[in-house]
Length: 397
Image 1 (cartoon, rainbow, N blue to C red):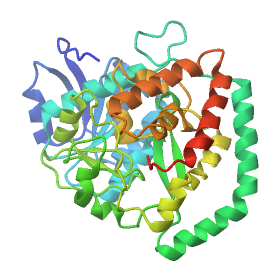
Image 2: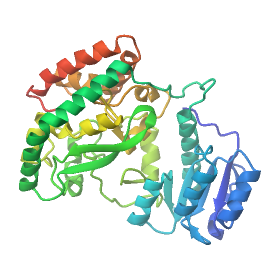
Image 3: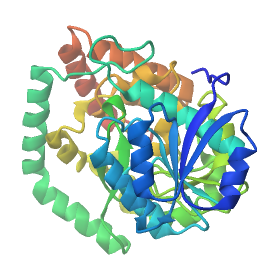
Image 4: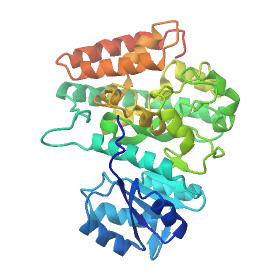
C-alpha cells in the first residue's frame, strides 16, 4: 500500500481551539486546512465542497458533542461513510472512548497533537476505506472482492450449528457452572472481531482465563509465540490501559494504543499481527480443559447461525490485529468466510514445531482460494474431518 505525498491532504476541523488551528496552518505545504466553529457550518461546508480527506472534530462543540455530530453526519451523508472521522479531546476518558467505538468513529486523539502522526493516520484510513468500498462497476486494483457463501455451505452451517447447540445445551450448563465455581466473573465474553470483507461483529466465547488476566499481561509478554518480548495481548482480547509515549491515542476493541508505537509496528510488514501464548499461565484449570477440547468455541455456533461466521473459514481477528493486515499483500485473507475452524488450525495441530505468523497468513490466503473454487464444500468437509482428529491431539495450539 503506497502512500501518496504529492497531493495536499484536505482536512475539515470542527471546533474553536486556536492551538489546533495554528498547528495545521503551519503545515500549509502538506495540508489544505478548513475550520468551522459548529456542526451547522460543518454540514453547510460539506454540502458545498467535495473531496475532503478527513474530519477532525472536538469532543465538545456548540450545542452538542462530537459523537452526536458524527451520528448526524452518518444519517445526513449516507454515501460518504468513507470519510475518516477523528475525535479530539483534552484528556482520555474510558466512557468517551467506549461511546466513540460504538458510534463507529475511526480514531480518538488526545491533545497535544502530533500533526505528522495524524497525517499518516489519515492517509492510512483513507486508503483502507477505499479498499473496503465496493465498486459496482469496476473494483480498483487491490480492493476486496465480495465473497458470497454458497447454498450448500450455508445449509451445512445452519444444520450443524443448530443441532450442535440443541444437543450440547445440557452439557454447556455444566461447563458454565464449573467456570463460575472456579473463578468469579462472567462465564463468557463478547468482543469485536473482523471477518469477511472486514465486517465487524460481536464474537462469543466461553471464558477460559482468570478475570484479572489483563493485569498479568506484562508478566508473561515473553511467552508470545508471534511477537517480541515487548508485545503481548491475550487471545480473549483482555486489554489493559498503558502509559502513552507520544500523547496521542488510537482506539480499538476496548483497547488504547500509542500512535507512535502503532505506526512503527504497522511499518514492519505486519510482523506481529497474530498473538498467541504457549501454555498461557493465565488460563484456568477448567479453561485448559475446555480449550483442549475446543469447548470454549461452542458459543461461536451462535455467530454461525447469525451468519457472521461459518463452521469452516479463516479465524476472525480482533480489531488491533486485523488493522495491520490491510496492505495489498494480505487483504485476500478477508476475501473468504470467517470460521470456527480452518486450514491453519488443522495444519498447526498436525505438527510439532510452532507455526510462524508468515505461515499462518499464507494458509489463510490459501484457504480463500479454496473457498472461491468449485470444490469449496468438499474441502470444507475434509477440514471438518481433520478437525475432529486434531481436537484430541496432545499439543495445545
